[in-house]
Amino acid sequence: MKDFLFNNDYSYLLQIAIILLSTKLLGILTKRISLPQVVGALAAGIILGPMLLDVVERNSLITSLAELGVIVLMFSAGLETDIQELKKAGLASFVIAMIGVIVPLIGGFILADVYNTEQDPEMASLFWQNIFIGVVLTATSVSITVETLKELGALNSRAGNAILGAAVIDDILGIVALTIVTSLGGKKSGGNEESPTLGSAIFGEGVPAVIINILAFFIVAVGAAILYHYFFKKWRESSNENLRRHNIVTFVFCLLLSFSAELFFGVADITGAFVAGLAVSGLKKNEYVVNRFSTLSYMLLSPIFFANIGLAMTLDGLTGKLIVFMVLLMIIAVLTKIIGCGLGAKLMRYTNKESLQIGIGMISRGEVALIVANKGASVGLMDEKFMTPLVVTVVFTTIITPILLKFVFPKKKKKDGTPVETSPEVQVAKS
Image 1 (cartoon, helix red, strand yellow):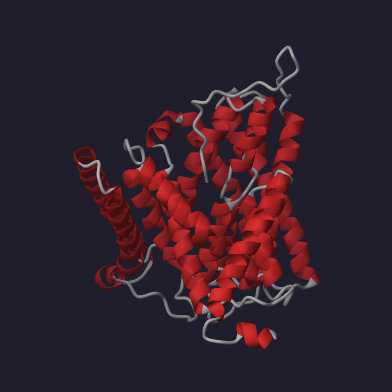
Image 2 (cartoon, rainbow, N blue to C red; image 1 turned 60 degrees about the horizontal axis):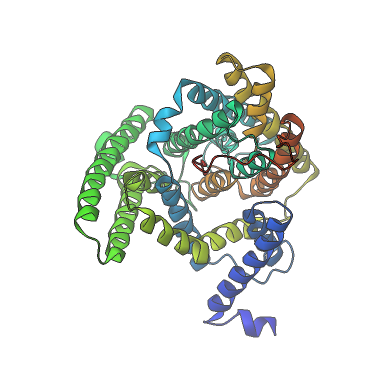
């Protein structure tokens, strides 16, 4: 029966249906136990994949839809980034985010350098592989932190505001780090040749040429984003009908910038998608665009992307050495954020208690870490055997963060004993 259902020309329809239904059901379940729905989507992939039932295959269609899903996710992240709030975040949030990126990067690199010692000729060099493990640990997802701080009535606190500002900057720094590492060390998926780009043909090879490529990309991408921002603003102000065409043109811009990033500059396509989202963010009446892309992502692409990561997890090669690596990775993921962000907060004259609160609030990894890990695996920067430890680490940090927050934030209550409500004007940084 299994062969009849899953080994025919139309089995992809059944597989996609199973992915969508299972990710939704498990997402609802995890939400009921106060965990993000992404954890349920990951669990669905693990259950459906080779680790357990082995009924859904990571074929070319699933992989391509997952890649499109990650582009839409990063585009949506750019759309929902409030540039004005980013400007207001100030020096304190920047310092917290910067040190909170550097310390995990170093910690992840040192751990990977100890455990990742076997060079695969089809992979990037061990140095860049190990650096990349550190890059994955730099990510921060504060969605679970925000929900917990709301419950504790602390979202408007000094530490809460610092966490929100630093999280937005953290995303930007993480994208820059990903861009640099994939450009310098990444290789073409499935082979040991470096990805050919127009930039490499013009500027040649080597570190200086790659840096020129990256700078050229950001100059071109930012210029294109500014021009599209101006065009989109004028177009939106002069037209109140057929808003659907705005979505189509904006999505085309996103895809073209993503395509150009990879083909011409050797930069990760998700970087182009993020910049494209920034081009439209903050404009009046852009809620229609945000809502439509949220629907596209929610209904099809995001579930497939996160399930695809779960499908990549396997017990093959999970040796005792790798299990020790996984445990140490979880410990380092927690400690490096507490130390890095806490140190940054202390340098900016936050109290010891506030510094600890900020450090703990930045522990949770999430979508961005998974997106970065998936990208690294596709360009030969990370062996897929490390995907299981990384996914487990992401889930662990997601679970441990609200528990630790409840220890360091006293729950504020009104005189009648009910929790203090946070201001509706507070903008939630989403990553």
